[in-house]
Image (cartoon, rainbow, N blue to C red; front, side):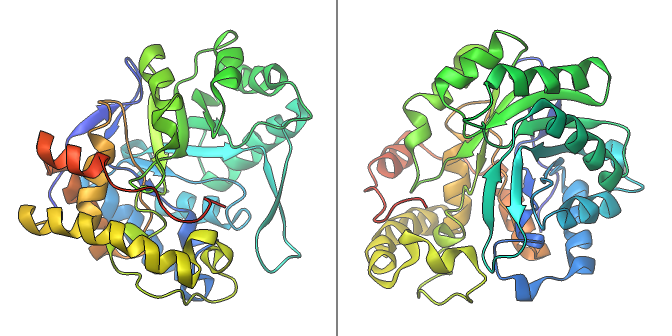
Length: 322
């Protein structure tokens, strides 16, 4: 069973959080919705806090809205124990069977979104608020300016961006510090190592990898392309039968290292993300306490230089990210 984990800071002088966070999206949205169990998910979030997994990540679009309400319920009497992160700027088409999203970075939308998130989360402030995606029809300065106003008003403590380019980060940084960048990073998605992660290191921002377990693939538990229609992965190029069979070679190499270290493949994958920089805090998602504890234990797994070199040399994944 996991014990309390080491902490890291959200940037050079930011909030302190556990080195592993908890992504809550899958509790409400995108992955196996038929398995949704709100009571169990509340228990997972509360157990996370017990373990020191304090960065709790949600968004208004997850559900939509349901996930923020769920997180608010879980944190109702433990708000001070969490570093609460949520996002705005994506809007879901609730009529489609699979999530269909559009971007809305208009200042008035973000102001309303922040107020609505505060209500759903049952809190008077959000620790870290992200622009979920930059809206190509709205200058990033306008979106960022509305979020900076929320900081000045005390409704938000720090602001970040998700999946932003270096140019967008630079434009935002010129107006108000970027506290964190949340982008995909894992052993089968390493694009961020080229420029996004180095930018955060150079500017004292945190890097928050989402999907650090490759949407569950890097745990070694997924060996066949069989997902229900409403599961996001059913239409994901990396989870087609041909791609998945090719990508299993990646997992087998990770498993070899895990066996040497008496760890799980997922723990090795998380330890690799942690090794990329001292301000990296991955946010694996889960709906089960056992997996939560396993993920938390990865914060104490030390990879040797040889381990890291072997992992760095893994082949690229077959199939596009989306």
